Length: 272
Image (cartoon, rainbow, N blue to C red; front, side):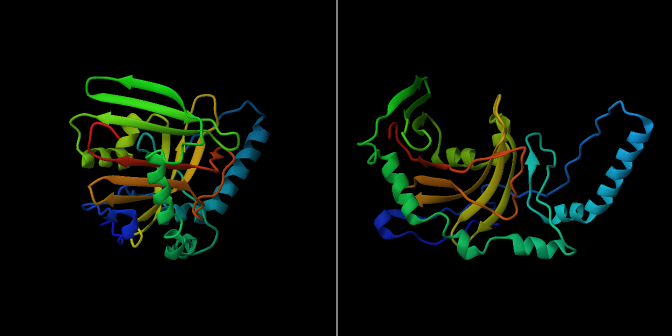
């Protein structure tokens, strides 16, 4: 499957949307059912029988919903095991999934060319003159260097900007590294589950879902839209932002991230 998109406005100085060779970044996988186990308690036999009976009746009521998992979005956990997917109510799961997808016209407007323009200005630090940025990390090795700055806003979350320099690494290799969620599981230990929800091939916008776990915190749930552009100079830009999707309902066991804006640029050269 190819990642098709249109051309960008000439005033942005960028080329066409990225087309992948044979696959979409953010790989689509088959869906399955999450399986768990019982927890044993020391109750009387009568209470145990009541619990088992209620559990069985609940399973029978939920059986049509379980069937819908084979028609829903793809989600895998960090060990490659099948995870849970959104449920539906009704007798036609195929119709449910079709009705639950966002209109393509709506997806194409989630991320705009203005977002790209603001990202470029942010990366070039054109918007930082009125802000106070503090250096938090400055690490340099033989073939690798990393610097990061933080802006603590009076209103809103902290903002970060970082620069990473890799020696002897192609632009395409680094792009694929960042966009490969399957490989991300091997190095990003915070990634618990992820899945692709929907793609608009016309605009190049993709919507995905992930759960990240952090020490001493409730797991964070992200529903994000992202888009990748290729510049005339061969550089790549990616911008991500929070969104909502009808296939993913809020769950008490996760803390939904309400505001998320992130972007990166990959280009050749020793320094940005």
